Image (cartoon, rainbow, N blue to C red; front, side, top):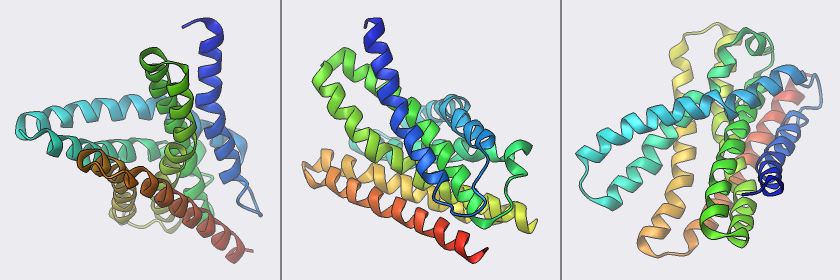
Length: 237
């Protein structure tokens, strides 16, 4: 891959998630989040969260590989349980850093920071998948894949991780027990897992509606997240 192709790959991988991060941040009408913690959340998702989740996925995947003999079942377990658990565990951990934590002063703040961390993760995923598609399948397949991921993949990571962020934000504001974050973490895993299940089920069964269902699902989830941000933002003012 030449230099120009690499530049195009990076731009196409990162530009949509950056646009969505700005979009999510600007969903608030009042007291919008500062740019520095927004950038830190995005960079964490794009770097540390990717590495940490990969380590966890390899560990849990090896256990599943030696425990499950049926390939279809192993695929579903990996996509629906292992990947969502590992990724939704690592992405929102950036909110434990003081530079982000001190900004959690309104209920909607956690939704925003969680979503932005998810978008950073999505950017790096776009980069990896895009590079593989470009090398193995060519320019046309790369363009199709990156276009799909720029919508569905980005908004999935934003909408899933937003919920853990919301739970963590409430935990910080109310100084409650950390265990109360777990239901929101579970919701993030369910959202992520269900999204992964729809196209995977389609591939296994030959049902072509799986990808379309995933598109519809992610459109609904990001709408709910943004609606929640706007509602909470309005209540506080």
